[in-house]
Length: 291
Image (cartoon, rainbow, N blue to C red; front, side, top):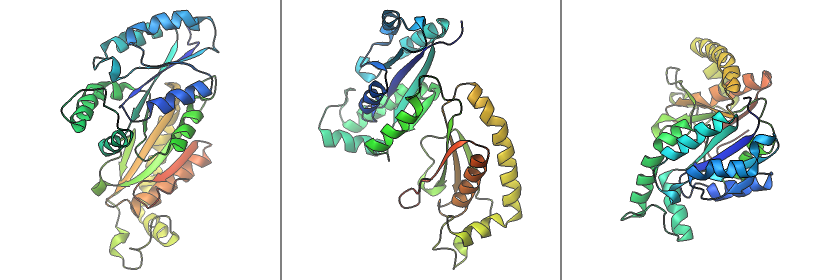
């Protein structure tokens, strides 16, 4: 049976933005059921008659309030596939520091009971680890405002039909500050000469022309970019064929200031030239400098 409808399973870490997500999906036309035990998904789908046409859309929030065993969600997703219904699993994530801060601000108990808030978060993250790895879309809300989160969600889910082309985020980062929480494809450009050791380039960034020119004038940089763009030209249509809505490409150097920033901009420029919906971010520059 051909895929005919859309179900979005909203899940992820408590405090990462599931409530905002549920409201956004309601605003763009989804019928949303909050805190639905996974075994009841087939009953709700049948009640909504989702198999009767392509325009009825359902969002279900499945999270730790129903317990930390998600095996029944796997069974529900298999049932949906058997009905020819396209289901997307959306996982909302955030850093432990962000989650602690949010729970302390709202002064509400965590749904997972433990001796401390930190332990509750750790238990929930461990229980959700496998589900996170199987999710179709992962959004890290650690640094997102409510407005930015809403914008990403509206862009992904406001259309009745799946996006024809996925959205690609290319982000630079510094390894010394840790890997990005959400990444599909990662490249390491620490093999390139570091502008940090050139006095006049050190205070600048890869967004500045002198640094960009220095990085891209290295013979290895041109060859690397050529191979990367060839690889992406191969990967992108295959990810799209599998229905992937978002792809995050991360480019890292030591501090996330020079080499990775310049290369991220070059990759973004190439993808834009190919007609791809792409945005560039620079995680470890002040303000993130998204474009």
